[in-house]
Image (tube, rainbow, N blue to C red; front, side, top):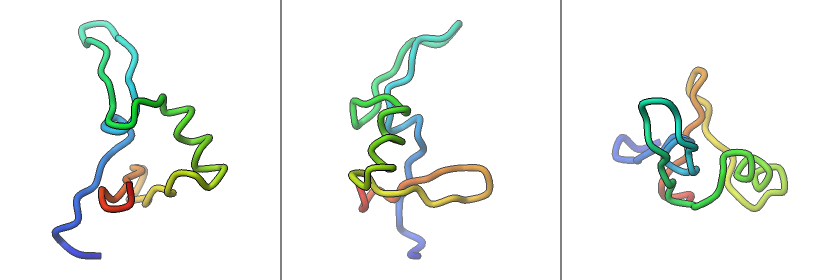
Amino acid sequence: MKLKDRYLRMSDLANQPERPNKPASHGITGFSAKHLYHLIKLGKFPKPIKLGRASLWRVSDI
């Protein structure tokens, strides 16, 4: 793993619904988190790297 690798969280990848005091946001994939995990299960999206409790994706893998 290189120190210059960039990582994204699910909140960066997936669309997030509107919440109190926070507007809805659109992730870079345009999919919901549920759909992204479905694609991971099917092998059509890279598996995340687990760092503690956090799931991270390498930008170069996406």
